[in-house]
Length: 175
Image (tube, rainbow, N blue to C red; front, side):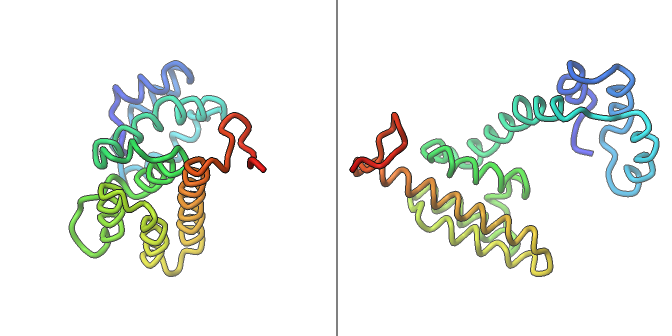
């Protein structure tokens, strides 16, 4: 639904048969009912091996989403890997909606504002607060909780290194 024929060919051409890529190209851009109508036919042709899916995800999708986040929040480049990964995860899940208006995006705007201001310690609460959007979806609520914890872990690791409590070569506490 969200990929062009050219993107499909570039991403999947090296990993799937010409027949499978052709089927994906034929359904490119379809969403909703139109996509659902084509699903059974596509499933008869397309079977993506795990290794191929991981290759495309790690080498195509993730770099693209990292760039999307950096375009939306340039100062996110200063974040630790764990913190940056959380922000990429949220953008991947919710889109790069860090500047969108409306109540649905208030936490996204707050995340951007806090990162730009260097107020990183406020971001985990912004992430947790986002769970209000999915009151009946425990999986998404749990995901936001894990993302908030991982962001905090990234902050804690940076703080520990700053005070010399962690040896970057070994990752262990200096005692």
